[in-house]
Amino acid sequence: MTSVHVITAENRSSYRSVLDAYHRARHDVFVVERGWRNLDRGDGRDIDAYDNDAAIYLIALEGDRPVGGLRLYPTLLPHMISETFPHLVRGQPLRGRTVFECTRYFVVRERRMGRTDCRLLAAFQQFCLDEGITEVTAVVEMWWLPRWQQAGFKVRPLGLPTLIENQPCLAVSIAVSHRSLEHLRGLAGLRGPCLVRRDLADTIVERVPHAAA
Image (cartoon, rainbow, N blue to C red; front, side, top):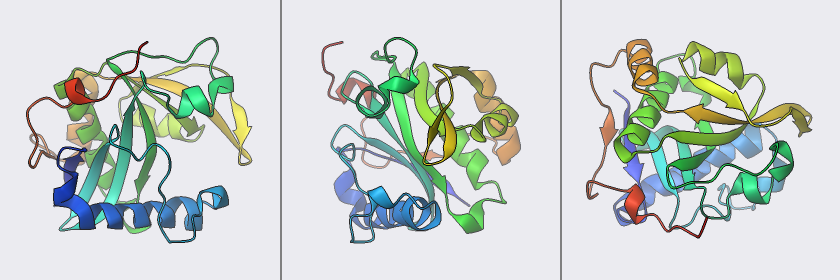
């Protein structure tokens, strides 16, 4: 069964091989499959400026093989929306201690027809509830919106759709809620949490570096 592991700067040394495989899986999805050639570093890995000590990864594993994942990043630090996509937001980008940004969400091709997607999304809601995160921002293609509605997410647009890589994209805020978590657990066939917090203290968000708001 797929389990979702929480990986931060604190326990990263225990996941070196997993993280290497995760970055290779990201490359396969975003560079090879999706055609985002500007991400190609030439070494078969997708790694960018936000893969640093402030990043929190939720990685879906089958054994030691990543089959999905996402990255959370504190919005009080310079982040992708504030630095690369501020034009997608009406007004100022959302920032706050309880607001994080989600990027690089993926599930590998051969697991997209099963429950991996719902388990990863349920783990995402569970992690945010556990850590006191109330909202998560993201830039997504428009086709994500009906999928998230089916998953029970409450999504709020932050601006107007804009073409990126020939796809209409939107900056959004996702509300974190127990209702969304319970709905996703039902879709995923989960009776309880599927998060694994190996070698982590209880609270993570309090230890994430914060810049001044």
